[in-house]
Image (tube, rainbow, N blue to C red; front, top):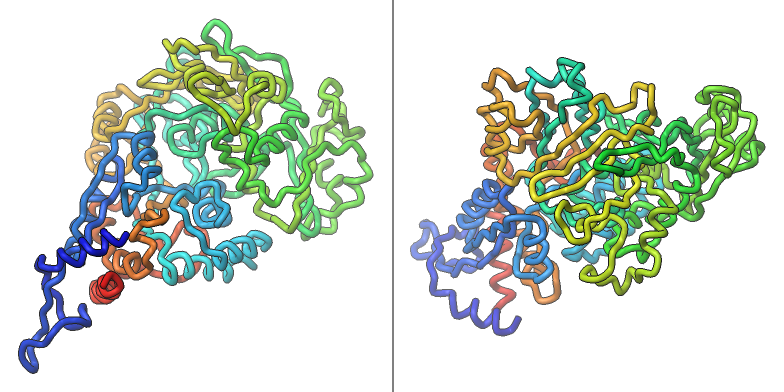
Length: 605
């Protein structure tokens, strides 16, 4: 760091003119005239990927005007970008964060809490972490003032992050083939492709539905071992969750494993009455077959216990969502349900569940072979938390916590030490090579609890077949048998493919005006909780640990310029907490930027 400071001091011969307001060190040339100074620009490296290249170039122009010398490092895919990030050879990284299930705790904990599983920068702020913990214990209305403090702390006071914009979620479909009215497009939820339907329904059994995602090279397919865009859709459509979100981001039992769920009084006990019409699927002869094995309470307990353990698998991304969980078990005593009230109600959990069951509940069982909802025999899973955590039902919608088969996963992972995992020789459940067509390790032993089973992946697409054991003969059974998700890094190529009819569905992210005019394209849109954000390299020795430098960047960023290049597809944001009405508004201020930049320069001298 000393050599860096010395080098920066020697570079102060480079020219940059600032007004006296923008630079406290400036010397007045004549009374009543503007003051001038010459300072060397501060070097910054922006790390990004092709889908953020426009944003990066706009930021480069803004920061250059503010006194920085900017290099844009565009990496072709997630893996190469992560390698640069881990090396620390960057100053600012542009990333997108989708807050699953609209849970404000999910919007901040993983990214900004000291112990967050995605806090890779890393941010270490005890005050911010304490506020995050406090807010998580409150109901939504009561939490708003605390989340406002959180936003103020992480953005305005400490400038740990800089929001660029809030994305509007769009789905563009070939309306000649796909009925736009059947597209599931939630604000914070994944796409559920099983709800889509063709205009000509007779094609549902023979014609594959072809969608596009812009994140290639998924790292693996174990739900808890990955939490990023390249596997987001796959997990949501291959593994059922304990609860689900509807298109309005409301937590509901529909499309989930729970026929009904209830929070007990005190917001520390949670009960889930499971369905008995969801079986695991496996792959045989390149098609999905019903195993006849029920997705049971035992599988739920195993899935959540496994996700709760940070050392269960390498790169466990699930544990942060379950940090407040104390116990997970199966209820067998009906009296327990009768003796606890639903939070905010005088009704017992038993009476509430009885209203939702297909027949009066006569018995609770932990034996999968005894389950028969139509005969009143049900399974109920109970979760307790160390402290009130009303947002737990939101977290359980997240595809990272998709339900896996206890027997299959434990068998495949037996004998592999997660802390000494060697991907060159060890094989774990969901390893990409076991599902990759043509790989020497190709051996799809996965069992899938969701509406689709993944048959294989190659360099171009992920291929799925309908799970015949997923809620058959109900409205939630997938309408279309086969699903292909193409992986394209170039958006314009995808747009051309949609206009020409080569694909059915994509989620445009910008510069897609041509799609609006295409006669065969319909656009479905919703507000979302997806925020594109700048994160700083806060590794030891990084210059971005200086708050004055971060603030100089913060006040140089003009969201309006960036929104303009996104052609009306995004709106202003102040943080990832888009669901909280904080009242904060983002404003650029080049004079403040210059003041903070000068404070940083002074600290070097």
